[in-house]
Length: 245
Image (cartoon, rainbow, N blue to C red):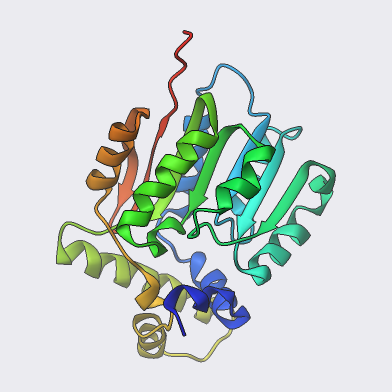
């Protein structure tokens, strides 16, 4: 099976969701994303959640901007079903697109639904080859309104083996705590073996956050920075300039 196809399997989706609770400072990462978006002078009226998973990032945006209209894109129908169910109270404001943004044709499907005040993505773009990552950042730039923000909460390449080891330990310890609290019987070693040998691991194509920020600057984003980082995780992005200002 092609490595990125693994994310279409419900069992993999469920495993990811079970481990997300153990992601280091996950809520803080979303809070940083929202702090960036709230620097806009105008409220967010239209947004795109790219590789949306169960829609957690879009849900955060709707919590702050309840009248916003959103587009949720994912190529996993299992993930989209979770997003639809979790956001059903906003159903009239939302569109859900089952498509693969690894294919450049995705922009043609989405272009008529933009331009967007914000494009956000969480733990998704790192599955693409590096050359495709850069193209995606260019495509996102084309979909943004002037002053629109792109914020990426992402799995990145660490600069040291220690950071990798600390990340793995944090997730394994967190998942083991959840296992014990829920009355599970798996040992920490069993949790570790499952995590370290997870079938979706080979789908990760990690790249340094500095290299990706350099790409954003070259494309034309401004205010580009890594706004948060811990171990192998980062929140980074940039804003599309308003040439009229």
